[in-house]
Length: 238
Image (cartoon, rainbow, N blue to C red):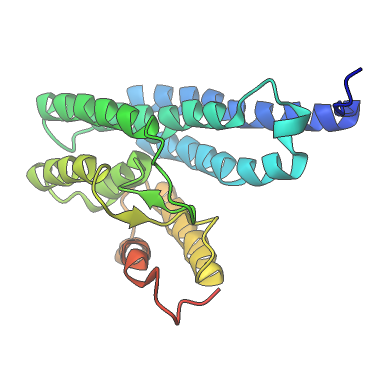
């Protein structure tokens, strides 16, 4: 007779509900994709922002609901990666292709490279370090492409940035997970909230924000890019 404990109905319902919540990010991705195809880029990034929010909290909900026990028939990690590939990679690539940020032929071929390299990155079992930092650029194309829309640095520089970022996915560097960071956690979460605020204002201003908003986006980006430099610093205490 098996002594394995089965989840009670309420707990099982909670676990399945979290998986459904994660999967809803796929529906949001379709809405963002449609907006990108229609060249409604503020709406596209607004939907991607919602997907970003879902991705940001579903892990906490999954751990609280103990989905590995209460809804074990669904692999939450795989589900999360499937949805993330749509929202972090596919939709931003289509938005880039449909935009006027660079010649169509250039964005098409770079987009193919981004999709292929990102697929390999998502399947890499070494994607995260033991302390939950990302190894290499974490395929956050939704964020990077948003910066290109807002800053519009010119297509040769945009193309170079995208190619370098694709290579950095496999480089021996680390990037922080903004919600699972331990060191400088309060400051990092505060900077994440500030970034969301600046990004939201950019969308309200049709991706042509005021200079102070652009400055805010640049400052927050510099903070996150600089974090790996102090990852092991003694003053970056818990």
